[in-house]
Amino acid sequence: MPRTLSPMNVLGVESSCDETGVALVQCEPGVGVPRLLAHALHSQVDMHEAYGGVVPELASRDHIRRVVPLTRKIFAEAGLALADVDLVAYTRGPGLAGALLVGAGVACALGAALDRPVVGVHHLEGHLLSPFLGADPPEFPFVALLVSGGHTQLMRVHDVGRYELLGETIDDAAGEAFDKSAKLLGLGYPGGPALARLAEFGDPSVFDLPRPLLHAANLDFSFAGLKTAVRTRLQGLGTRVCEQDRAHLAAGTQQAIVDVLVRKSVNALKATGLRRLVVAGGVGANARLREQLDAECARQHVRVHYPELGLCTDNGAMIALAAAMRWQRGRAAERRGLAFDVMPRWSLQAAA
Ligand code: KG4
Ligand code: ZN
Image (cartoon, rainbow, N blue to C red; front, side, top):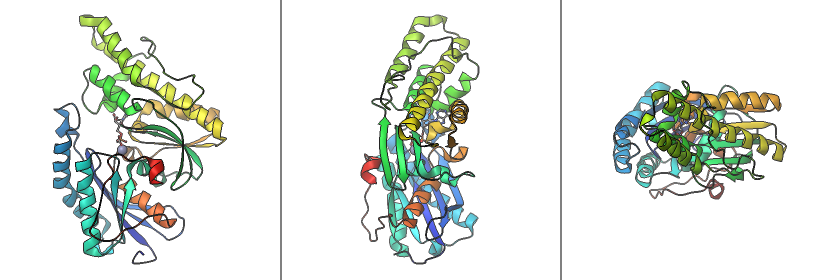
């Protein structure tokens, strides 16, 4: 059991991919929204950019370099000592095995040294709950649109740890569609923000791009055909392709992804009868998606909640938060001792 009853300090460590994130969250026993005390992040984007994507071995090595200085920084910022930590949380999966092992090793070593319990958190649960750290936290139950680099899922969320999958992508994730199309357009990594920037100069109606499964009766997604369509249009333009064409293509790609995400989210709200939508994951930072979802949700009299912009992509705050919210409900699966593991492949439903 945790050392104290009130309040409880939770340290979170995220290292599943190319961002090292650490954070301290404080929560009270029972059900109140946990409070973010401090968080720090180091993005490896500059390091991986030269390779056009994440190089797993480089990612692991960089996590090792960053995690301890970042941890020192947040303790100083929060005015806390290591001994003030009551629970240590880390991203157990899914993600890159070597990268995950760094966070797991640090968290479990700290837990053992301090004699505190340790919790392995599902990365997507972190994303899913991240809007609770915002100025306008949602209430359960809600429909969640989870749009990250590797996942695109619609879920009915009853409570923490009670997730019902309504639909998901049958091939590429929305973030992957952004990234792969951006690469075809000659944009850097990560492609999502770069494509969104270029799209501002384009007209989305110039190139008619596919919106796969838009009218399908189910809540599944398919984005693999979109990048193929972008490639075909680029090949059609050949050497005549100019900067304006590329901007039109970027705008068309973004609009196709956004149209599908918005329509399917509305369908999920209708199918469940719920009137609250939570958007989480890196693609949730996309301004066009937010704009269109806001307009559509206002029309449908649905409340929509997003994470703060800085907490849309990977961070330690969402990991500490997920552990804290689970702990408040007696669902934290805390462990003690020296053994630790990671789950590079792990479904959220299996984790619940
Ligand atoms: O959630 P996340 O940080 O990492 C995973 O858990 O996968 O999501 C990263 C994804 C990348 O595909 C990135 O291109 C996309 O989120 N992304 C965006 C934007 N910011 C990040 N996509 C579109 N527009 C953005 N502004
Ligand atoms: Zn993520």
